[in-house]
Image 1: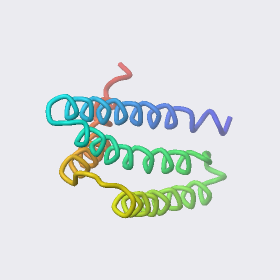
Image 2 (image 1 turned 180 degrees about the horizontal axis):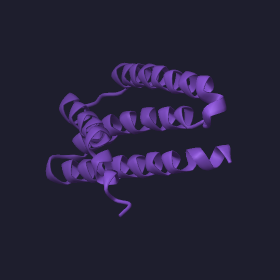
Image 3 (image 1 turned 90 degrees about the horizontal axis):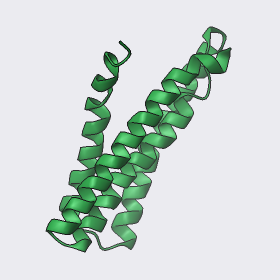
Length: 129
């Protein structure tokens, strides 16, 4: 019963992650085709950072469900958000220290993935009619 309560949220999170991954991949392929491969790889890395961080958040946020687990739900949500921020900082630090990336496509596709994260849930609001 408890897992049935979290199932719709998990499905929406999975759909959102797939939309983000598709948007980032499409943008990276377009940038690689129009500019050059280095820009495409940088774009893929930037968007990938956002998608990975959001996936970790989704795993944590939907770990518990139900009224009896309200404190665990809130704690897992906040833990997931803290991990998301930490993972984002760590992945950007690793990329900056150990790879040669182009900053413009890296930041633009990161922002694209964030924009998808903000705007795409609107698609799910009236989708169940």
